[in-house]
Length: 385
Ligand SMILES: [Zn+2]
Image 1: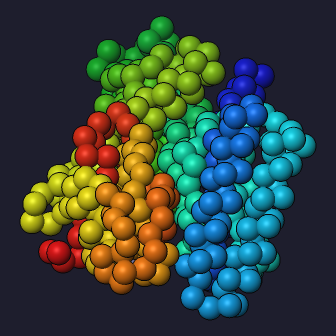
Image 2: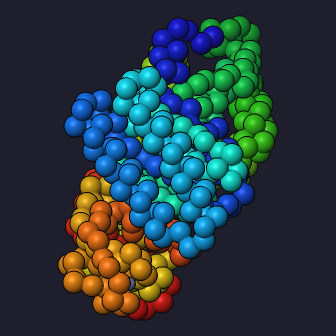
Image 3: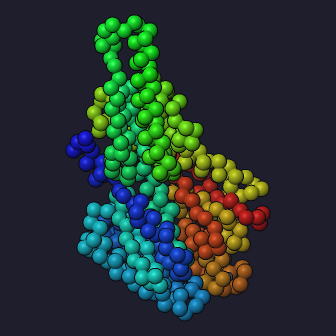
């Protein structure tokens, strides 16, 4: 069974899955505040967090069109600031490096998620929680159905966000060679083949049942190379399509080691798949006909509510301006807003841009720094601006 070193996995990975599900299931309600912070745990970062949250809050209050919305934002903002002081004075989240706050007074929601990784400071007002940064962290905590199989036994485990749940255990009495006794070699071999065949069929049937119960779960098959190859043939096509890794491992190894290898290989695969998908999407966003590249172009598109999907590199940071009247944005601060002649103020582009895109019904995707998106931001457009 599960030996104690597996408990380490339970502690090092964070089970965000439930929190995400809860937040995702909330009905859209405006205004909904999502605030991500890098805690830092020093005086400098404390002051930076205060300045950031207060500044963003001020913008949000100015932007609110209706008194009712403004009152809700004000209430949520006070909750966020109060919690922030608790964080700064180490009354809460002492061990976290990052914290995500979700506040919606209208729905009586105030939800905090601590993280061992710092978040980029982000403040978003929308009609729903902004979950992308949290999802990026969660994607490192895979959920996968692992089938450890050899020619006479099998274990099926669900590897959750840091947990291991045994689902099925199958042993079949397959004869070993030294039992051959009076059997002719051919009959003996056929008998063994039949028994292995029967065993694989039984394991395949158990795995199929479990996999059909949760078809979204990726499947990893681990075992001696020959068995893994042979075993796949017993699975129906729909399950084969869910298999993300066929991992050659000796099942004689420690289970902790096997599970570790499964998770590592699955995560590598996931990362690569996510990156490939993002690269494909970025190619679209970076094409001159369908997208906008770089801060100036992207801001212009955002002003025209033309952004279908915004891509923000995790290391993107830029200052720009924002109109207090019509909330248009740009890079080089003008004397007054070129659109409405209103008063402009200097602002952090990242958070405001994300807020603006979400507010106009667009999506936002975080791009890992490893992809080295040179322009920092890019956007796929609804139409050509
Ligand atoms: Zn303006």
